[in-house]
Image 1 (tube, rainbow, N blue to C red):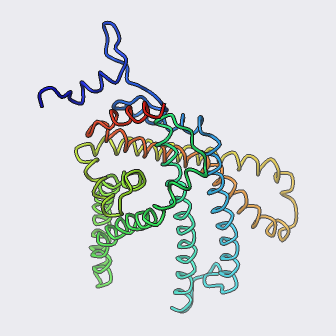
Image 2: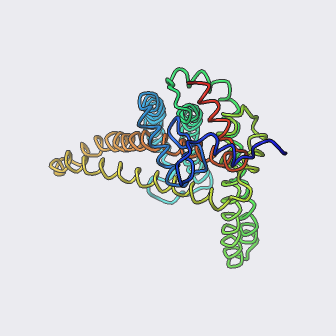
Image 3: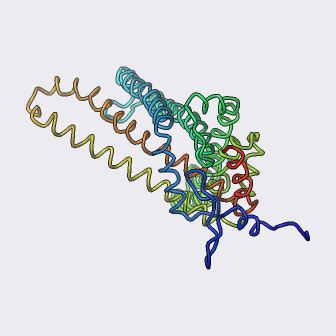
Amino acid sequence: MPGQPGPQQGRQQAGRPHWGGPPRAPQPGVIPLRPLQAGEIVEGAVRTMRIHWRAVLGISLTVAIGTQAVATVVDRVWDRSAVELDPLGGVTPETPQELVEAIGNGLGGLGVAWLLSLVGSITASALLTVIVSRAVLGRPVTAREAWQSARPQLGRMAGLMVLVPMLLIGVFAVGIVWGLLAAAAGAEQAGMSLTALGGLAAMVVATWLWIRYSLAAPALMLEKQGVTAAMRRSAKLVQGSWWRVFGIQLISILITALVSLMAQALVLVFDVFVHGAGAGAGEQSVASATDWASLVEIGIAAVVSSVLTLPVTAGMTALLYMDQRIRRESLDLELARSAGAAT
């Protein structure tokens, strides 16, 4: 409209003009308030972790230790119960009942591990998203304040964290069921081919859906959206930028994988250093020590990995959400006004 500045004019007014060059975007917090490059999103997540390390470390460490401690105990207890039932015992089950028990034990262990991981991811993602939103404005925040802000949305976040994975699992189930049915009907070769093709198609569709709804969590937390509204909001923000969002989320996955491998390598080196000299001990004493020791070592590696990766992945997703809103809705102008009002 005449007389009203557009988004680009507003950005120029919000930044500091440079003689002979473009204006500098204001930066009250961890990122400049303008459209971001992929490297700036990673840098902003790391900078948030460094500046607000007390709140970030407190949340990540509490969540990682709590979930991993329970997971370690459950793994050990579940393993002993499986040995007592002896559904596999190193041999092929002789009856259908033994096979069903073996499958049930395996799926049960996976289900418990997934549930624990889900609880940790919900809590960490919600709290860390709040911290990132404050860090963008340069505002201090404590873990208690992040909890108070995130707590009303935790139930909806849980619904989102369950609905999206179930949607992806459903896609895979639909993709492979036809091949399994064909194999069950006797056409084994055709069934295997159909299963492979269906699995490949399901992977493509699931990846597309994952990126489409990857910004739903920060939309739910920061806009106080419901589950379906947050998913629709994410789809709107991702539309037209799918490949860009995919590339940045892929960077997040690669960072997580690299840090996890490094943590596991460090624990492995420590294990060899500590237990290498005791390799000649009796088999029974080694077995009894290794069960708990190996689970604890795996748990330590998982805790170290989670403490380092949870803030980065949650921060990158939150900053990517803000970047998409800056590009589409000139959120940078609103953030600049909020930061100015705060100062």
